[in-house]
Length: 123
Image (cartoon, rainbow, N blue to C red):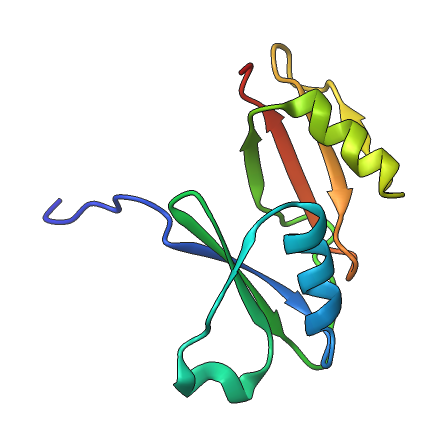
């Protein structure tokens, strides 16, 4: 092949109109992602962008809205148990999953019902 996909630039989840503050409260306030400025040409579309490490997560407005119940981003986490405790203390339902031998992970839903997976890096 004359090409190679080298990395993921960003992931996007959907949210209903006028939900930017809920996205900020959750992705920045609870998960600790840094909110970043959207390009001026895209601001009129609504939504909000976040950054973590070298990656971005975009929350885009979709109407009619339908949450992703199966499709999901998966995040590797350092401080896995601490994140679980933090989410529980924040009133977020953590669903542990041991269906893959040797993999420690859990799922949560964002405020819009989108599924998110978190995996233990062992650090």
